[in-house]
Length: 311
Image (cartoon, rainbow, N blue to C red):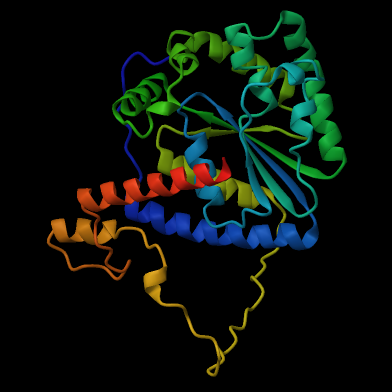
């Protein structure tokens, strides 16, 4: 736990975006290789709350085909799932041939939040530390490429991100009571992570640590490492030939007036800002209050006539 906040020097944005673009191009090639080779890849993202796991996953998947690259972020277990073998609910989300699965938190919840917050018993915790390496060795033995990342963030940077989320209505949902308790239980989480590493940092599936006070650098480091550890060969997406559109046709499009276009909100925003109107929705006259009242009255009358006829 640091005593004094250290201002994080962020990586230059233009440099970051250029390198991210290059790495994302390689990720597309890697996915093509996974698909063609029938490989199965599981990438686990663990770490402190607000350490940047979600934003890293977002950059990894941004240009990947979602049909074969899935994000798994499970909610709290149901009553039925609590009665199952602990790893059981994760097994059904493992990849089939040609698939990549990215786990936004994983079975390691038991060694972290469940351990610290008392959501599991001491026996369940000890059983997990014994079974997790066995479970992961079975996955690797069966041919799954299992990669585990731990995102590490300083206490001061974590609190700064919490406060940023608190002020942002679009990200405030990310702050749960359990997240906020991670501030007061910082040392407990540190001890739990250290104990977890002792038991589960195995040669077949080691932990790789990402320092994430600078999110830009963390994303580049994580993606670069992922590309270096997956034994893919460069693949170009299959060439696609766009056919010529037929010129002659007996099709006649119905009049646009028969459609129900949405209001052109983009045009209103552009007009309010003094900008040219964008090419978008056809102009839809807004209904007056009298017109709306008349329409409601007519609909009510028709509904009553239908009821009387049925009676």
